[in-house]
Length: 317
Image 1: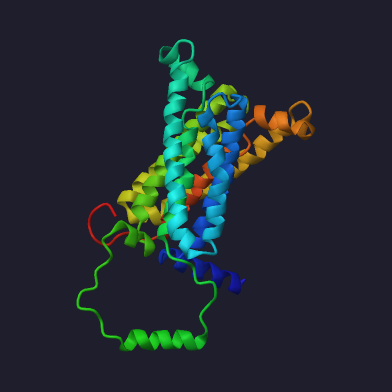
Image 2 (image 1 turned 30 degrees about the horizontal axis):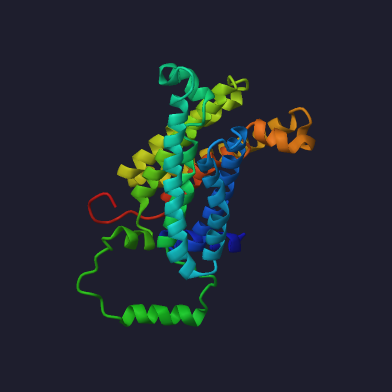
């Protein structure tokens, strides 16, 4: 038990110092799998009627490969991964525009927006895929974890060096955003990102569950957890106390609700005619299997925001 506590404390120190590049790259790979599968399933419903519907699917394998390679190669993490991350963000924005256009082209267009937004292409889904790009960009800016604990003589030498080394005349925190991320000082921007993606995930959950007429009370839970998560994320931008005390709680609840939704969606697919034996059809036409895990990724972003540090000087990060 003591060893586990020591490892958790060490992990927290690494995160606060901005040393979790490999962990963030692994998160990017996982997010790419989730968003890529959802894009494939949703666009398969539309029979890939437009060639651009293949782009989020086509970006998934190189994103996964780049993210996993970044765990072993710092060069890949700093050069290839951010490039693919930027392409993923651009693809999500383009997808959002085309989904808006798709809704406008439905019978009645935006005059029947209340109906067409619910029954048309999922309006916020492409923007949720931008989480892959955001996580990838952050991974590229962070520093790498220490894979081993320093020995006692290395710790002693480090302490002696710190004691005898003369202090600099002016020790100022880094001003550039990239440098702040590398040193774990980006709490405000991370909290704001968690709030923005919470709005998107909660809004998409509301629309998708409205399509299902909220036939189970538990379908309201992602809608209920969204306002507290957004409030905590915005509050953390202005208050360190909110960031350290409120945001971790709302993030944990959001993360767990996403896992609950994943289990219920899996159960919903199993209950369809043919169950898992008719997997290809039921995965496509049933409840979106991995969509709730996008809500869990919002919780992870918020939890990371609660652990990293704030910029010391004035201004927004």
